[in-house]
Amino acid sequence: QAGYAVAFYSGKSVVPADLSPLYRLPEHPALIAWPVAAGFAAVLLAGGALFLLRRRIPAAAASAACAAVLLLPVLGFAQSGPQFAADRYTYLPAAALAPLVAGALARLWAVLCVRLPARLAGVVLGSALLLAVAGSAGRTRAEIGMWRDGLTLWTRALATDPDSPIALNNRWHAREDSGDADGALADYDRAVFAAPGSVQARLSRGTLLARAGRTPAAQADFEAALALDPDSPEAHNGLGNLRKAAGDADGALRAYSRAIAVKPDYADALYNRGLLRSETGDAAGARRDFDAAIRIAPDNAAAWHNRGVLRHRQGDMAGALDDYARALALDPSLEPAYRKAGLLADPAAAPGGSR
Image (tube, rainbow, N blue to C red; front, side, top):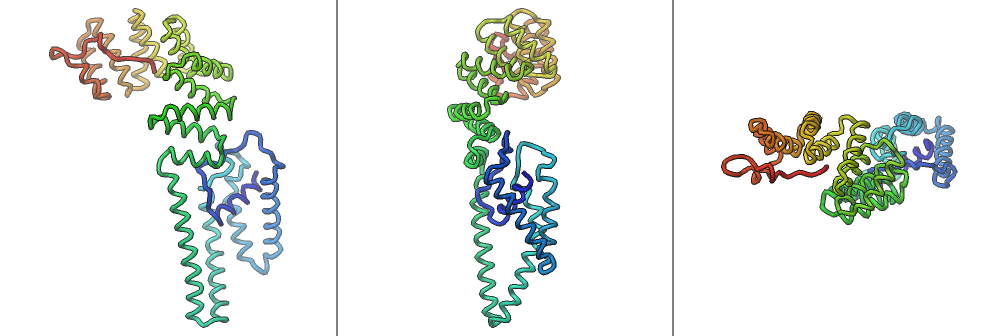
């Protein structure tokens, strides 16, 4: 991996084309695959040549050695993150090569001045440099276009690595944010196919399927996630939402409680259990859950609102007014529901729903 990475970074520094925000580390690297073997062989040959020429061209050996030292922390000897390489890792090592390029240009200028009139030498070298800068500017413009938005960025990453679960995950979020539910679902399907052992892929697809009302498929994904990770709080919470929607209050309560037992600070599950308890008449339990959800996630307008509804029903108008005010500050769209006879919303009209 390290030998191939040196060749990879060297190539990207010389020809920075087809860049990507992420080059995924394969789950089962084929160490004898020809690209890895060829890259490693190229590094060995180049290193050997530089060593043999270290006295004739000491600057080349020194610059290459410096660049290699700067690359050492990111070559995978101590793997950090899901990538085997990243374009940004070339920035600092490339700076070590800049003096070598400058020296080579100075040497070329001296040679041209010997063989050509000074003015003609300047025209030749200047024209070459202008072409190089123009080419670099063109490549820069082409490459930075992929950073326009998340959808463009991760579509580009998938063009480089079509089965990258990370790129698929990020693109499906971008598609969801843009309202493209069908496109997001297609990415979920690809992610699950590419990484059937990914709990996150199952959870994400299950959540989207649940929102689309495709309950059996959503349940299958949440159960598959639990088969992979029996303690997944998100999977238990998702199943709780499905059981609540199906009218199985007891099953939903067990699922939410399991999610909270695994992750006590899981605000969404606390809110969902509080909502369920409020609807089934357990006012004391609902109050505890709403209190905990608000303490953990004070920006949850729905939790403030539904605690206000609970307090309103119990006759605590002062407390309800305070909670409604906090909910309204977080979510101004609630204002129409809070107008009635100069008071706040009728609790019966209170919006709510599982998260």
